[in-house]
Every structure is written in structure tokens, then in C-alpha cells.
Length: 262
Image (cartoon, rainbow, N blue to C red):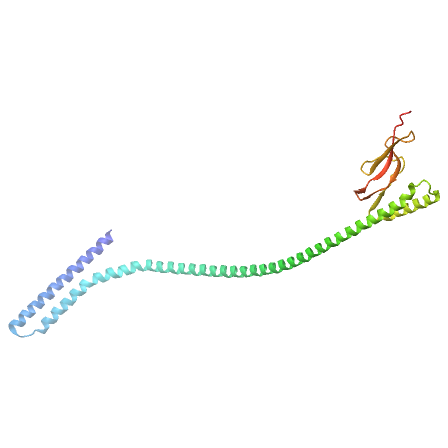
């Protein structure tokens, strides 16, 4: 506060002094012109003194303004310097951010390039997979067609085999046939059963006394007997056939029942 008052007082003093000198200078000029009008004689010394007085007044008038201007400049200089430093710091931050952005852009660009290369590779692999799948699909189709043909051939073979076995079994039911011939036919049937069983065709020919099974046996008639348990096979009239669990034909049999006379 004291410093401010002192600066104000100094300013007033300089202004006052400058006004005094201006007054003296102006007064001198007035007297100089009056003198010049009356005497027609120019007093250069008086004129010089008047001009010097005006010059001194101008200096005293301008000097305080110069001091205040200089003071403002000096006071504003640190702020200006700080502002410039701040702008430089901001510029450095902008430069760093620009560098980071450029680096990120390059990384993103390279990453996208790699992703595109990967996608191209995936596309090529997908094409190869599709081609491989198409080949497998064709192979499966061919295998199915082959399997259909094989199944048809197997069905035909089973049909022919069954016809052959039944043609061999049929003479066994004849009463007038020779026993040696029967033995020979049974031997042929037994051997053929082994052959066809190896390729999946099983002949159902139950033995006498074996239990009746309605899944693979078909009853032609029942016969009373005390020698066998009820529902036992007394005689197989015609053999049956199956492939795996699939029964093609049930064996036709005669089964026993309890003798009612006992």
C-alpha cells in the first residue's frame, strides 16, 4: 500500500513539474511573439530558452508514463514467460500425443494387415476343408451305393442258400428214404451250416428236447409224450433262418404236451 502511494506521489510530482515547465515555456513563447511584434527584433537566446523549457517539460511529462510502462512490461514478463513455457509444454504434449497416435495407428495398421493375412489363410483353409468335405461326401455316397449293392447281393445269396438248404432238408421227411442217404444229407447240411454261418446266415434247427422259443420257433402241432417236458421240441419239420438278431424265418416244429392218460 505504501509503495502504491509513493508511486502515485511520484507521478503527481512529475506531472506538476512538467506543468510548471510547460507554463514557463508557453509564457516565454508568448512573450517572445509579443516582443517580436513590438521590436521587430528576434531574440534567439530567449527563443532557445523557451524551447529548452518546453523540452524539459515534455521529458518530465513523458518520464512517469515511461516508468509505468516499463514497470508493466517487467511485471508482465514473468507471466508472459510462464505462458510461453506453458504453451511449449502443451506443444510437447501435443507432439507426444501425436507420436502415440501415429504409433497406435501403425500398430493398428500392422495388426489389421496380419488379421487380413490370417483371414486369407482361413479362407484358403476353408476352401481346402470344403473341398475335402466334398470329397468325403462323395466317398460316403459311393460307400452307401456300394453298401446297397452288397446288401442286395447278400440278400440274394441268403435267398439262394435258404432255397438250397430247404431242397436238401425236404427229402429227410420222406419215410421211404434210405437211412444212409439221410446220414449223408445231414452231413451235407451240417457242413453247409458252418459255411453260411461264417458269412452271417444262421440256420435255426432246434434239437429234440430243447425248450420252445416263440421268437424263433413256429408250432405246427402238439404231441402228447411222457418222455419230454411240456413245451419241448419233439421234431423240427422245417428249419428257420436268421442274420444276426433279424429272424428271416422261424423254424416249424412239433412240441410236447403233458400226457393226459397218466
